[in-house]
Amino acid sequence: MLLSKIKNRKEVLAWSLYDFANQPFTTIIVTFVYSAFFVKVIAPNPQIGTTMWANAIALSAIIVSVLSPILGAIADSGGYRKFFLILFSWICAVFSCLLYFPEAGDVIMALTFFVIANVAFEMGTVFCNSYLPDLSDKNNSGSISGFAWGLGFVGGLIALFLALFLFPDLNSVGIRKINIIVGVWFLIFSIPTFLFVRDRKKEKFKRKHISNSFSAIRKTFKSISKYKEISRFLIARLFFNDGLVTIFAFGGIYAVGTLDFSFDEVMQLGIVLNIAAGIGAFVFGYFEDKVGVKLVINLTLFVLIFATLLAILAPETNYPKEIFWVAGVLIGLMVGPNQSCSRSLMAQLTPKEKINEFFGFFALSGKATSFIGPLLFGIITTLYSQQIALFVVLLLFIIGLFLFKKVKIN
Image (cartoon, rainbow, N blue to C red):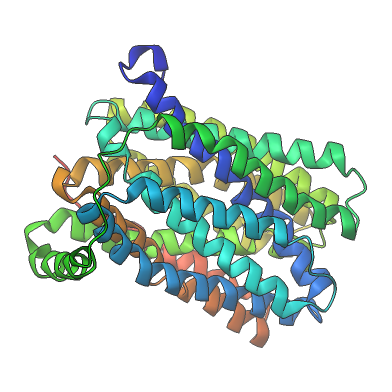
């Protein structure tokens, strides 16, 4: 997609830079580097660490599922979307930097800082996503969303290269310092979004905005039957997004704990997966506008199911790391298109007057049950192994695909 073809290209680029700014948090802290560091170094042992990390991810998901529809409705009634976007972005950036301080044994400190940063990250994403319907139409929402996701993975890739350049040894101190890079990166590159993405005029805060928010949520729940395809889509997304959340939370942990990856190998995996994810988001974002969003999402789910099977079987082969690399690249190629297309589909289906509120429910559908996958992964790891626990992800993708096939899109 060429920005030159879009009338509001300056604003679209500024909005897209938010993905560029926040993606290193997911790539470095949640998926590849800090999660593995926590399990291997900070926690008492990898098995206990996996369960603790699972509980932290689950707790984050529960908090976001409660906050997102409420704050989304407040933003609708009071015009506070930009305020919440900036607030949560700064909180995430600051607490990402604070992850430098926990050392071996500082489990509570590390998990507290991570949960706060993770909740703030997710809430910032809710309000960023809600701008998409304002910036696009049905003819280019896929291209714009895909461009932003692709730019995000470029951001994650550059941040990984920067981390490797500054801290090539990847010792304990170096890995802790990488968290500061993530926070500062977020602060700097989110500035264009705050400055150039337009918002409606903010109203003076009144108590009625809080009561109005709860009234709007109740009204939306009561009238949800009027939006049957949105309901079906959000229910399907409950499952397949939960699978993605679990992969993000435990990708690096599985590589280190089951396949004996070193931190250097995990960083290399992160770089390759970000390249694949960036390519996937850019290419499929354009592809979506040509063939339709449903076909693309179905394709991503089929490939994600196959890749998860490869990851499960990898330890049983003669080339476990090589097989896992193949699975990882396939997952990387599909993650961007799946999330980007989900976001653009939501933008196409959402009534204009309920943008923030419905994107609050979009976040709710991604988080309401997303504690289940990580929680089950942690429990099954404790009872059996990480390899057996990965079947949870496979099941979530299969259920999500089955339910999504029932969604009818005009």
